[in-house]
Image (cartoon, rainbow, N blue to C red; front, top):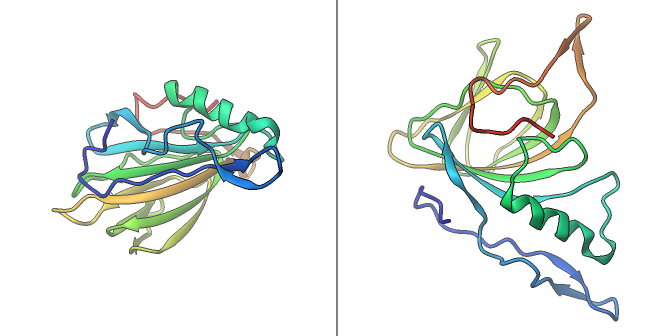
Amino acid sequence: MATPSKLPSYQRLITTHNSDGKAILSDTIDSNEPWQDHIVNNIAAFSLGYTSSGFPAELNGDKDIGRYSNLLANPPGLVKNDGTVLRIVDMAPGSTSPMHRTVSLDYVFVMLGEVELVLDSGETKIMKQGDICVQKGTMHAWRNVSQNEWSRMLYVLQPSRPIKVGGKTLYEDYGGMDNVPNSS
């Protein structure tokens, strides 16, 4: 499926090794962008760029590629509790995600456009193309500040230990993203 955003498409290149130990590009999975077939609450399109399983990741025999390939047909929740998730998200003009939390450490990169990070404390910060946010399990939302252009963000999510503040455990909360599976 192509992204509905009309932003430029991207390729996902996966490297591996040939039988001589030389680096090659894997042809196991099509390099075209793997967009999921739904748009979350009509404001965002998700693309599952890659996943890993285990720490450290098992790369021998291309086991990681096989596991990832299986998840393309049945994508995980926002976080994969036994590995990492690389996700691309296109956000519609003027849209705001629900306020949500994942129990994870996320590296967030604005690829295209400008996006406002909104925290549940009321604090906000505009992120421009090339900016990075390290998201540490906080309640937050994302807002595309443009009323005319889609934005694109890249996320790398890895599970974290339970988040505890003031003796209280903070759990995953998708804030009403009903068609997104729970983290697994």
